[in-house]
Length: 572
Image (cartoon, rainbow, N blue to C red; front, side, top):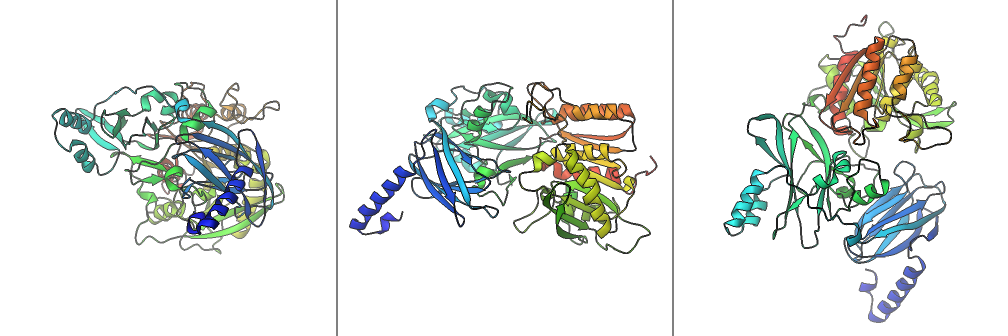
């Protein structure tokens, strides 16, 4: 781009300079390119790719963090990757045009000056990675059948009129005589370069990839796929043009899965996007997911802001732990009318992990509107006014801390909770104290109550990761398919019953296709049965959805009403 605006003589010199730079910093498979981050800037690299090539590169961070921005051969921004302990250390993408791609390395807001490396590990051409399987048509869509009829009858502009009639996707159709399901049709408007399109709907597509490839209507730009879906469902998905082949296996093949995911993007005709992160520098269409809420999906009105509802206050704190030797963000929700001096009736306390998922920031709204949910429930007198502690993890520490980590649980009980009690008017009664979280947060909330029932009397777990098992000394991997799941359930079997109450939620889409029980659905059901057999009070909810915030944002209110609601019996 720079060279184009210069005079002819300077243009030639500029191209020669860029050619020299390209050769010096060109990524080559297996060769680590070293770089130095200084004043927030690193080295610029290049890689030559053909349209449809899948590229994978690994970064050696050496205790720093990077943002790698990828520019396409025309000089326009194409992709961007944040590389750190939370987002990972890999760059994965599919080239959309042939030529030289430029990779510019910069620091993040937390970066330290120092060395790093970028290694190109894999380039797979389009023809080598494409699927050749033609997906079967399991269900027939009314609009698609009408288009076929119009084409057969030779009606002019049939395809153009079809696309003109599509307002949003996917298309939803009722099924005669069926009040439980609907037909859902995904669409993609292709071009001459489109060889296939996959619907990335997990975990189904991982187990049966051939069933989730779209059908091409011959001699048109119409690609489509129709499924039968429950009317109560909520789910997220992506569409992947020219998706890589993936074996119809139920095992976890990480290499295949990465290639398959690389071309996934939001549905351009579905305006509802989900899971956008303000900290992720990538283009929205590549980092977001498209969302679908079926007509009979349970309402989530507690999560929606309402005019006239008094709002609580959020206070932010930096908390240093002497036991863990680290620092984290704590957010405190104070209900409307909070009284710091009324010691006759201290407030109930709710503790939630993954605080950043619930609390709004300057960058945007949270994935689960925690303060809004508490405001609405309190205003409608469904729960009493409570103080809420939202706990974040230090960068890169979530997986380590939210894994029944005894050191973290001891800090929670011996440092964080006493700190909250010292600075805020909250209860010491476990019956009015609740701990909760989602996924690993639900796992850790359950472990917190198991180890400290004198502090926590109520447990909320949203899609708790109860298939988790502690890694063995000779196998540091967090996922070990050889280890029997349900470790947490066994701890409750071996422990005396205490006065704990539980609310467990999980989704119908949280199953393990391999049948090993490495999933939330089976593991939550198993834990429920163990707890009931031990005599615990358990509320159990299964929703039509997956392991995602789209469903969790609604079930939070259900759990709060059940566990700390104004109508519950504290002497139960």
